[in-house]
Length: 621
Ligand code: FAD
Image 1 (cartoon, rainbow, N blue to C red):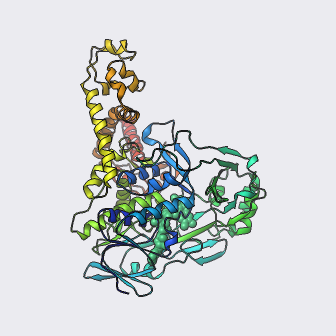
Image 2 (cartoon, rainbow, N blue to C red):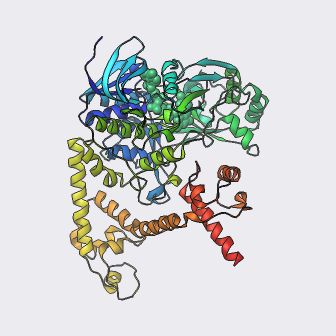
Image 3 (cartoon, protein in one colour):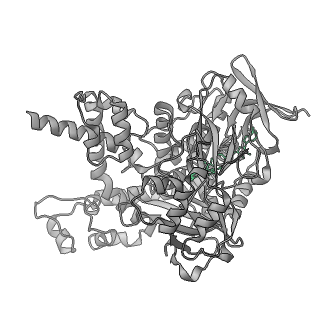
């Protein structure tokens, strides 16, 4: 069948593909989203949750750029928790557990309602080039879709192999086929590919769990949403159950390690160390007597429960044994066994920072295919690739977010410069500018830039502009205040009697001064709305730290040439994770600059190395 010419064809309907298609269409492009099974668009392959530390920041950034993940997470959220609530706003991470079915419905609705997105069922097996420019994709049934750019977001499907104990079969996700022809095509193109793995726990029937014997964890009373537009929860909220592994659980797992696909030698791919399987936990943390397991309901009308913390590739009967060894799970029935999946990824160092394959004009890669793990990381890459794919069709230069702009910029810079040796996920420690890359100011950082690229719908721009007007007008009122220490103290604000006059913003920067305190000095501030108060308070609080952060980062760049003495003992540097100590000891970088380029190194870790070198030098002199 002959198809119309598309601007962009997006291959895959996962988290990367949906954002890619939506972004290119928001910018006015004609888009086709081709996926194996359109009914599975927006499926959460693993845990029914969005956000968390670092990841939550990414979701806010996606929303700030007009994307769809945040609104879908809010619409389907059955439990909201702001992680690190007691720490500063820079490292707080919004997280929500989703009703899996409602999340999918929300994503599919966003795509349906977005003009210019056509959804097609099919397997993309090849793409056609004219010279070095892509001009069409070919489906397994021979259909050719002419287009000017292609975004590949094939997730865990390329060369996917599923393992449960010694059983293995090809598959991209449980119950879905793997993709082999496209995997070969990418290898033929000369893209460097490797194998990674990830795993998922068994799903339990909630009706067979003894909830009365479990501790519970409710959500927050004042939920922190992902989207700047969300004002209230959309559906009923639920609590999670908590149980623990115990000596018996550990014995069962230890006795059966040889039957685990990961430990029996069946899997070559590297898995995420920070998201270990239960087998890994028992082996690596042998001294621990128990591990916490959160029992997360998968939906309001679904009895399935996701036991967070026990992903596995042990045989099904062993899974049943160890699950039933835990309190409250003695009668638990498994509705789907846990499994591990191995898949091809493409080395992201082969991509530009717009996520384009440089050898093929118009070809972009986004999501798990680039070696990341996680819905949020995939979605953010999808948005970036979709936007830049469309821009390429208009001969416009790419929009590239830098490490100063966004966590999305940090991730893409890490991927394209350092590559991955294990599935990459976001952490706040990866960002050197984390005090300014806060979840609360994602819109101020990114919405104007996204508006310029054509990504922001009219209503979102109007709401953002009104918010910004309120912020700037109140900020200028605060900046015009000139308060003597005496006047401040008379209003109950404790400042030094140093004779120095201060503006309202300077007063607000003191940790124990609130916006309400300023009303005593300027009663006209009483009419300022809560959102503006809270935001200005945060901005004032962080201002001086942000200046210090900039000095630290500048110093780090200046000190990049510091070298390590030949006998430097990386294992003895305190504050580094054991993974990083092992990696540094193996690689033995010669300089700070080289250490910073090692995959997995964070700016905070580089800072620790530099501090140690300076300390050693001081002692020697
Ligand atoms: P996916 O969501 O995998 O979507 C890929 C899409 O591409 C699908 O719609 C598929 O139909 C389509 N597709 C593939 N090939 C073709 C083709 N040739 N033609 C047409 N369509 C095609 N993340 C975590 O953060 N933590 C975890 O613990 C975790 N565990 C996981 C465990 C398992 C078993 C799996 C499968 C995934 C796990 N993930 C985990 C990863 C998470 O699911 C992914 O990071 C995320 O879904 C990736 O999004 P994506 O859009 O890149 O790909």
